[in-house]
Image 1 (cartoon, rainbow, N blue to C red):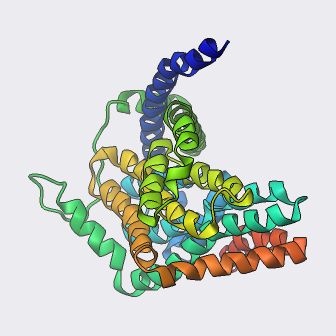
Image 2 (cartoon, rainbow, N blue to C red):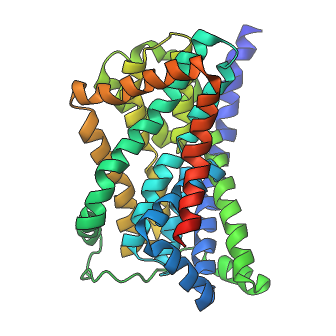
Image 3 (spheres, one colour):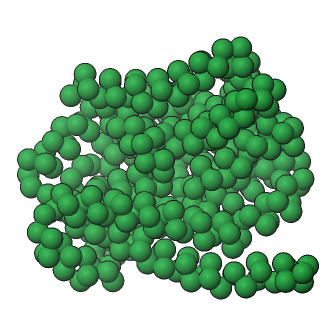
Amino acid sequence: MDLLDQEKPVANKPKSFILMLLAIVLFIFSIDLLTVAMGQLNNSVASNILMATRNPFVSLFIGLLMTALLQSSSTVTSSIVAIVAAGNISLEQAVPMVMGANIGTTLTSTLVSFSYIMKKKHFKRAISAGVLHDLFNIITVAILFPLELYFKFLSKIAHQLASLFLTGESYSGGFGYNKVFTRPLTEWISEVLQIPFLTLVIAIFLVFGAIKLLSSAVYKAFVLDSFQSINNMVFKKPYLAFIYGTFFTAAVQSSTVTTSLVVPLVANKKVSLKKAFPFIIGANIGTTITAAIAAIYKTEAAIALAFVHFLFNFFGALIFLPFPGIRNIPVTLAKYMGRKSVQTRFIGFAYILLTFFIIPFLLIYFST
């Protein structure tokens, strides 16, 4: 029986690899379909998108709200890459949306913590772990958003880095896109449907499905057994936890999966909140690989936006990781939130509703 149990993971490996390849092809296809659909939208739809994202605060909260609803920053950021590549919005307009997506993606780990709501001591630690990811991204946005707003801090660096990848061309900032191998099929589907908005909706669902399929396949093939076996090693030192967080999340392509693994560990006292934080910081960098894959078009827009996503999380890591004093700020705030949520359970629910849904919706509604 033991021998059979040991052979099962090995037998499942080839299936996981096949699923991975299928998911990657589906992801490339869905992003290409999304780009084609965005390029075919009529001028009125394009102008509405343009007007909505012209206000950087609205753009920020659109990214937050969409990610909170879809529960996948990878879907939102890769979709933004396609929208920018199609020329509907500029890179500068897309940057706040990417920042918002980074906040919206933290909802999952906070929701996971509510599975411990009936156990008072466990819930206190779990909600602290869930909120820690939120606070890290919110503070990072609070620092980098004004710099981008007034100085185009991330956009300018991303433009410069993107120009290094454009061999034989001078970087002009234009946003044309090249054809990928799926283009004949995506153009045929678009012509058959003849409704760009319907094509757009189908493409978004396909992006979401491809990421979920890829995440599941890689998680089962590489991460699950590895994470459980090296659990004691992962959190020994801050930089080691950071590296593991980056690696596991890059493999799974979902920071929500890896950060949600941390919540039960903290809740059950397997690891302290302080030691888990560097892992969460690393997870934020690892998740940027999805935008990099979406940038397969090799265009200025796609590459630059992929760099924006990476730079946002990289600078966030630079702010917190090297300095224990600064690193303790989100940890202290998260612990405080944990204590308050245990005293009054309603606070946790109110926090989720206000942060991820009510405030973003109201700001978008009154700003447009």
